[in-house]
Length: 280
Image (cartoon, rainbow, N blue to C red; front, side, top):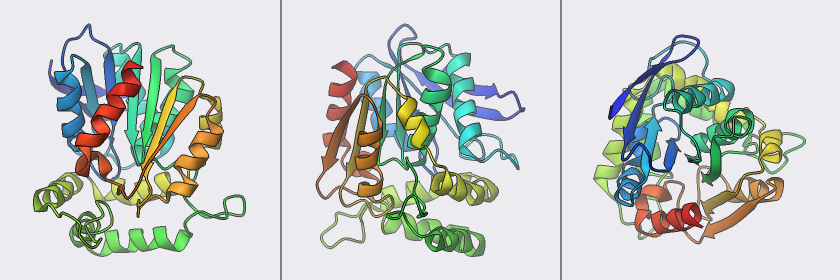
């Protein structure tokens, strides 16, 4: 079974890929907003070539998973990931999450993976926890008006909004001297447009307003937290630096000048670092 669907308790079909030897250590990948498991191509090919079992799913409403109306929140995201992990009976697994997927990993590990004894380690890459939005308790966060702007742009012209994000801040292609890849831009747009506008609209609240301080505090397995210091989507001082403080057992790695989408633009540098942590 190379790819298939699992049905969640609330009847949502979650698409997943499962490559490599079934008796090898599993690595499960959790993608960012508004993408799909295809965003992990560079990592899945790399790790399967190293002998690992690699698994990735499309979040509900994203990619090839069911375009349901409801449940576009971190609790359902984590429960859906758990449904895949339990269906495949993944044990001694490493969970790697990018951006919104990092929030999904934190909630999954704290609520399901760790209590069930399924998780060996986890990695957060350019991830949204502990909390993106600015509040009285999180004064360095991003103002809610920014996320309201995302919602307005998505509702007005989702196709153009996604093109603007991919060709601009996501990969740092708006920086002087950046090596721009049209294929990467087109692939981001393709993944985004496969998903549901409703899931993407609701997902903005999920990734920006979910306080995951307690999730991070509850995690005891070894964690690698990593981000580029030129991340224009998730400001690193309010993300990776706070993650490292809140986690009990973390390794912090900041890449100078790397963008939010560094897993794609700098896979040649990051993949060996991820492997070193997984093996270490």
